[in-house]
Image (cartoon, rainbow, N blue to C red):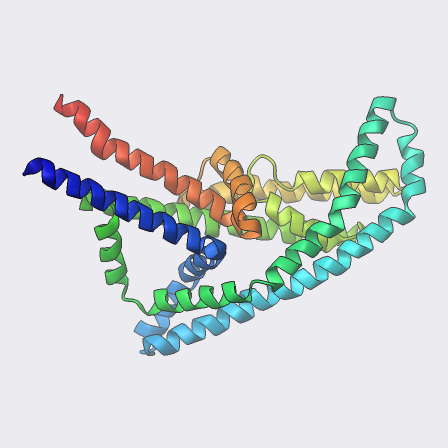
Length: 337
């Protein structure tokens, strides 16, 4: 009897795994919509609760307002930014072409090995620079169905009772209730750290970087600032990858004063990461720098630009789940022996 029950349980588990694999495969093209809805839910849930609890709005009305606000505050600015990035990427390519003689003069004074390396790197950057942004913007423009799914999920998450969502998670998780609640709290801390702490620092650094590049006359300041936004999510790496080559560029093209000014500005902006990030992480929680860097690279390859947020989150969730599994099953088994 026990053997028959065990076989049925194994068959049921295999069936569940097959259905799960099929659903994951079918939903994979819409992965950004799913994670985008979760990020919007996290950002706008406090404001939604305020409208429902303080102003006594209905759930549907408050959720509708959150959708409108997210469109105004996030989606429309991103669409405008995308169009500006394409325009500036073209301007950058034109500027580089016009200043090739200056670069050639500077390049001729360097050792032969350095000259060859710089030439190869510059050629690669020029060939891929414009196409990168054009492809990115086209991909965003073709994701109308993703936006529809994202906002449908966002609306559903908002209007669903929070306690029901919590009970649903507790029922699904293969851990004890105490460990599941602990895991939820850890997830919440990591999400705060990634979206709030890292997000605010990255936006602040990218904004200051863009301002400095514009002041000191670096072409394509918006494009470089956007790249700086991505790099600012990577501790240790960060925005020096942008402002240091830009300062060298200014010096090479005969602007030593602007080069020195940008160098000082870049150092000051980079200190924002060393001062503000630890302060926020002390209050909210933090992710190890290695996890952040690996997460960004993994996220970019699987989720595009949204991956700079999703990647570190998923990697951190994965490591936390393994830690919880070890605490509940491995350590317990060892203690029983």
